[in-house]
Image (cartoon, rainbow, N blue to C red; front, side):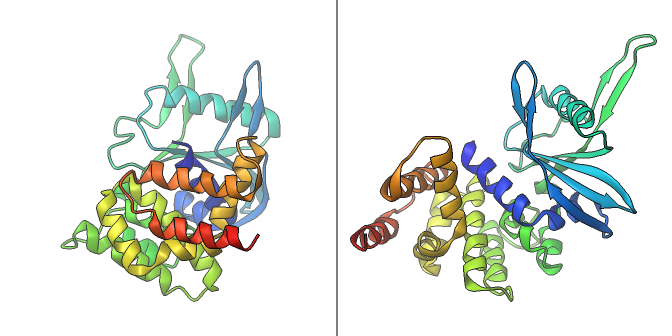
Length: 272
């Protein structure tokens, strides 16, 4: 689902430190560079995220893949990514798969094994299923880059789904950040929530909060979607870029009320 990949990549590039601390549990990590994820072979492969870091005085790579579905070929895919990255960069690598949807990745073993006599190969990686992570820890520790993913995490005991989504939104709005940054995070949170919540719940909350109008006007996430679309040659111009955002939102929430968004677009087009 491209819109979820786009959002995940956007936030890991913007907040790499938060994701590294989350997946590795290391505090002493210095981000050196966000690397090109293209791996040219007979076919071109793209990793979701590859970051060059310094850990305990040693350079290394941090690799993340985001998955919304269960893929039985994930172990061999990860083995390919990992081996090619080592070959290209000559550095040790820490790899993780982050499963966004609650039921995805339950049978991912976290390794690929070729068990042949004298030719044994083992490639390991971490498996992180967001539905098994305590979401309130992310909110309490203020890992800003992970806030858009918090609604996909385990909700506190005794809290229903709608109350948890509302809590994640309220926590984001309370962050001591510039308004444009908070709107950006809320935009990603709103779309990612479609992986777990019914569209009528999301629609009700974002309508009550007046979020969609702000997202369309101020979110750099919206601009990011338009930029990606233009780079891929799918859209041209401002109006077509807006339609691309329309499509991403409607794909995530088929039943959403788009009246507020259409009103924003009408007003924006009138300023041209």
